[in-house]
Length: 316
Image (cartoon, rainbow, N blue to C red; front, side, top):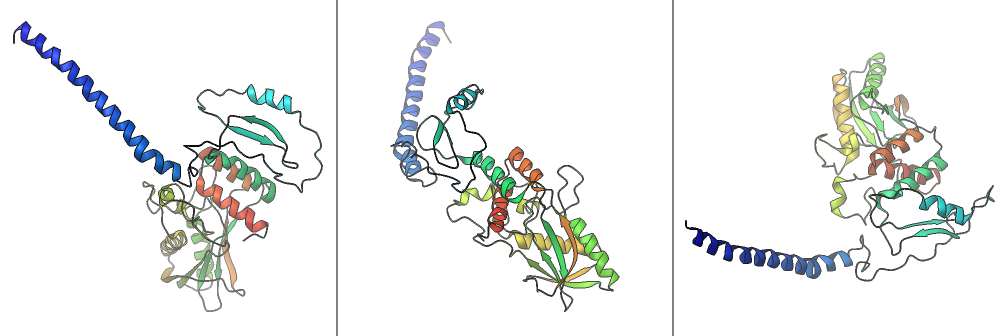
């Protein structure tokens, strides 16, 4: 190709490229403004129009009006200086509010507009769990034997219960260990075959928050008092079981079978009052559960801990 022809080709190629890029940008802008933005603006999870009409957060009310008198007053100016001195690199558009939990008095505010707090709520959830439940509290997953020889697996609301034995920190309880202890007790009674019931009735309902969209289904499982492996049938997949309690029961039945105890049937069953406890495994303490929840941003653990708080407060 001659130099003249190459020059003519370059002459039309660049304007064409510019037109293509410009057309793509205009099309993307129209798509965002006409299609995406209205959908987000009307999405209750985003906030009913907050994208189009940002609102200022309302003045807070008292959060814990029943608190006893504080041992020290808070200097709002000193608090502001401390918070303003914290590094904020990489935080982006920041909004925050600090209030006196007893009176509702606003002590510090940064940013404006209503925001979805998202995983920062786990900090509050952890503080409440530590305060209400205590850092040393543990949750037990138990097995019982009924008068007619049925074994009941009863969930105690352990958010980290695993199917396999756990040596690594945080040393989660496991169905493997529970099956070994249960099988040993059954063999001592001459039992080698059982029907298995499973009881997840410790928590109330609903297990799935009706305000959660289905897209949350890979981020959190239905919350029950009996769940194992974060309700993941496959550890290599984000998919969650829609029936975590049954998943846990099936996993336990498999572990019992590996211990030489045949399981002939698996079904949901309430634990009879007269049933005798056979074995139990214990969760890490709440302090460790909160540490895990925050360090791993564990949605399941955060939700389960708040169910435990509700249970302790008589709200479920």
